[in-house]
Each structure stands twice: as structure tokens, then as C-alpha cells.
Length: 178
Image (cartoon, rainbow, N blue to C red; front, side):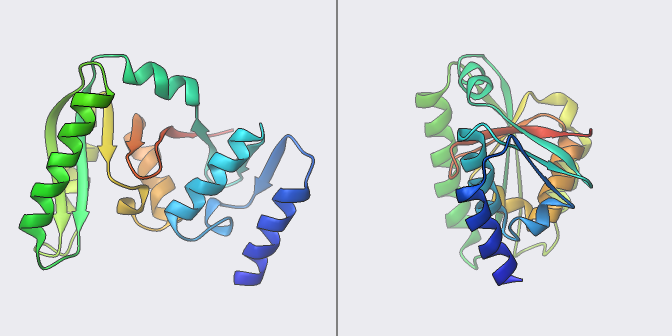
């Protein structure tokens, strides 16, 4: 409930701990971007977040910086819910290409997977998961593209390679079962 989530945020502000153990990540924040924000705050404080159901989410500033310096094969995943999907796709691809060109050292976009209003499903996401061995990293606009937190953690496990989000400015490398 919202009160429990507000209580969780307050607890994190005053807590003096090394690890926060939760039943599952969905109880931290329902929406993925908000959840990733909490994970980033905890990471900055040196606090690990561990879920009894999903394990530990791996987030590393050093790993992210190191990945930017390597020539990697990237897959782009995006999902659009606009009736102007074609125009949105074009703008998004320009943003991804600019990021790769100016912020990385030799990443190449090998394939683009786009789901959206036309299909109404996430078939392209499933195709990406099926072909994940072809890539070193997945690039997306926002972790919200994977859906709510509970879906996000499941997808991160299935991908099991680093995923970089432009919006959150962070690279997450799957989950690790404890």
C-alpha cells in the first residue's frame, strides 16, 4: 500500500544498515523507474538490497564506466504506446544512435526490437530474450519499458547481460540468487 511504501522510504533515510532484505522487489516500489531510483540511493549509501524471491540486483558504477569504454554489440529494446509510433520510433532511434556515438567507445547497435500499440504484445522482447547470446548489452530508454518491477526483475534474470537505461543513467547486470 502507499503508506507502507512511504514508511519504507522513511526507514531508508534513518536506517543504519548494510543490507535491506525484502520479500520481493515489488514491495519496494511498484513502478520500475521509482524502484531503480531507490536502488541507486541505496547503492550510493553502500547498502545492498536483497529480495528473498529474486535475489540481489547487481548495480555497479565502475562496471558501467568500464562498459562505456569497450566496443560492445548492443541490442536496443523499446516499447511505444502512442498512435504516432512510427514518428516516435524514428526519434528514439536517433537518440540511441547519438548516445552510442558520443557516450561510448565503439558500441554498435546490432539489432532493434520494438513492441507497441500495433502488436499489443511484447513479442519483440521475447525475441530479444531468445537471441540474447548475440549481444553484450541491451540499451533502452527507460527500465519502465519492461513493465512493473515484478516483470522487470524476471526479465533481468532472463537476459542475464548488462542493461543500460538512458533515462536512469545506470547499468544493471541481472539479478544474483543468494
